[in-house]
Every structure is written in structure tokens, then in C-alpha cells.
Amino acid sequence: MPAFICTACGTQYPASDKAPSQCAICEEERQYVPITGQGWTTLESLRVKHRNAWQQHEPGVTGIATEPHFAIGQRAVFIETPNGNVLWDCIAFLDDATIANIKARGGLKAIAISHPHFYTTNGEWSRAFDAPVYLHAADKKWVLNPHANIKYWEGDTHELLPGVTLIRCGGHFPGAAVLHYANSAGGKGIVCSGDTLTVATDRRWLTFMRSYPNFIPCSAKEVEAIGRAMAPFKFETLYGHYFDRVIKTNAKLVLEKSVARYLANLNGTARPDGT
Image (tube, rainbow, N blue to C red; front, side, top):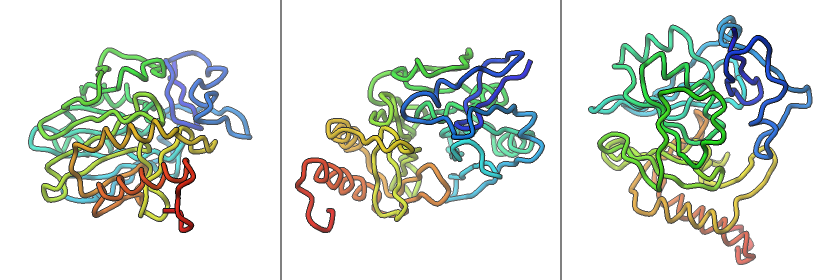
């Protein structure tokens, strides 16, 4: 039986003889059902016309995204470390070429996902590479296609590998997380943020939302918590959820300024120039 995938968000459901009547992710207020209605596909169907594109951001840090655009347009990040490789976030499309490319680079030690909009086909990736999938336990209710390789982590941080730390920020989802890799960017550190911390279109600021398509902001309390969660970590570069959403330098300062600007605009103390 096929395992149907939502064409709007990329979430894969357990194998069944017919498509689900609705997608729980898209019905929830952070996502949406397209005006054309709910649509479904399968990996087999996607493999006819789709492929994964690779873009190296820096040595050992490579983005992977599907072409043509599919679902939300999620982008994964393949991180190569001396202690094993990590896939940060998960895209729905997986084919033999992607599997061969990753295995040629040493395979995967772990898969870690920021929040439910990137859960997609994580079970397929896990089986392909015999790799555990790390999800924050606070978002367990959104695991719609469970499997034995899911590892739920709790608390505010989790060391995935030496120098690789998952940080729970919350905001977008209760368990929304980012990945910090201390040894990248010439030892200055990087953060892979998905859209837990979203790189703005101008690539000079970050923003924080409960729902991006439906324009629901995070609260002041949630954004203050994001600032506190990130405060102990040093990082120079931040990789967002699309190829071009990258803050190359001074990313920690950008985060601090963005939290301050966001809070000032919420409480009415922002200056006329918006800062």
C-alpha cells in the first residue's frame, strides 16, 4: 500500500489503500489547506519529475532542497563532522541519487528535526541510512507516522555529537529547536535554525512567528525565552530554511538585535525607524 504525502506541507502518513481525508498539519492554524483543496502524492510519483539540488555553504555544510518546488519548499542541511554526519531538518523527497551521495560521504549518524513542518518523510530517511531521528518530546503529538527509530529528547538542550547541540527555543512550536555546531565557520560556530528563527528577506534581521502563512506572531514571553535559550552559545553564521536565507557574519549580534527590535515593536517603544 502507498504511504501518502500531503502536497501542501510534505507530511507522510502511514501506508493505506486510500489517501487520508485531511492533513492534520494543514488543518492546524500554523499551516493551511490550499484554495485548490487537499492534495496527495507518493514518493514513487514524485520521483518521476523531481530531484534534489545540493548547495555547499561552507566546507562540511551543504544544503539540500527539492526541485521543482514541493510542499513548503523545505531545505535540509547535511553537516559533516569528525564524529559522524548529521542531517538537520528533513525534506519529503528522497531518491536513490540522494542516498548514494550521502552514503559516499559517510552516511548519517543522526537526523535531527526542528519542528513538525519538517517531519515530512523522516521514517524513509531513517530506514535508508539506519539513523535515529531526534525530535523534541514537546511536539510528540504531531508525529503522524511513528517508527521505532524516533528518539524523543527533553529539556532545553541535547548534545547530539561532540560540538553538536540541539537547543529548544520554542515559539513557533513548543518544542521548536535549532542546531548549534561549535566547530564550523572556522571555529566561530554556526546555527541551523529552520524557521524557528527565521531569516528575514533582507537577510539582516531575524523574526519569530507562530504562523508564517497566517501571520500569527509569537508573544513577547516566547521571544524573550528564545533570547535566553540562545544566549550561552557563540555563533558567527546562521542558516535558515531556504538556500538564500543565510546570515553569514555576526549572526549572534543579529539575533540579539532582532529580539530587541521585536519586543520594542510589541510594547510600543520602537523608534520611528523601526529599531
